[in-house]
Image (tube, rainbow, N blue to C red; front, side, top):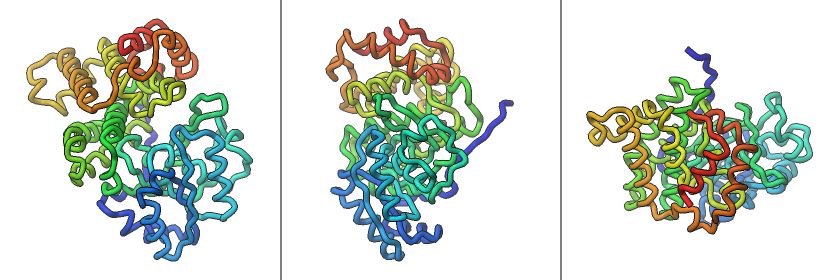
Length: 387
């Protein structure tokens, strides 16, 4: 058996309206007298920041808000958030929103350490750093950032850089499904498919697959799969929303302890170069990558298929069950309303070569964890098949 080191949050709350009812009391458990809420302007406009602020203030905690986070947060945005936290001597950091807000909050929680800019700690070992208490409150069911110890930001050269250490694992994750009720259909779909990818890649990781992640990935995928159509068509179903949110968190715990792979490797350049949201980018390339992987991973895909669609795969051999699994994922993408051809997103055949170069040169670490190696020509082919 492989050696395992496994990390997850110390405290997870999964309960509707828990941000309003429990945030302040949870913060007091950490003896905090001042807090910063790290979020984006859209979350503020929805009134969610007001709810969090009121809960904290009723517990006697002073609050400052940084709501300038943007998708794929650049270094300067993170530096700006750190300055606000330092200037106000905040004792607690709360990431409220999608993955970008939570990833920004993870780095803000390191602010008491001696560094001037996030640039100073990129690609550095920060495992010896001090960290402030860190809460994560997701408003989407997709990234799993509330349960991961990785923060992905955009460096000055435009590449995605990761700070990857258990040091930045959130201490508390609050899963409040009421915060996901107002999600538009396209965001609901993209984030859900993102979480499904996390489950599949965690379960099939070539380098760090382990029994704990397998169990969480399997349970997470079942929750996401069984509720996907419900949340698309009945967005106010609070039970379905709660299952999706918890499924996403389980997916996050699974993949951060086992790794993602080539789907992420091919999606990152789409997000960076063409500003396609991360979940949508993953959804675009997932079926092409999984189909490519069939010769190496069909037995594992078949195990997932039999768990989420037992009737449809009954009596099938591994290859056929795995193929049926990928076909249904493609069906989910098509029913989502998301664009699923690169050409629909202003990507042309002339762009493919540069995209494939980025994958093989910049994100080779994600090919290394994939069930099957990929050459430059094979990456190019996958992109062209979805053009």
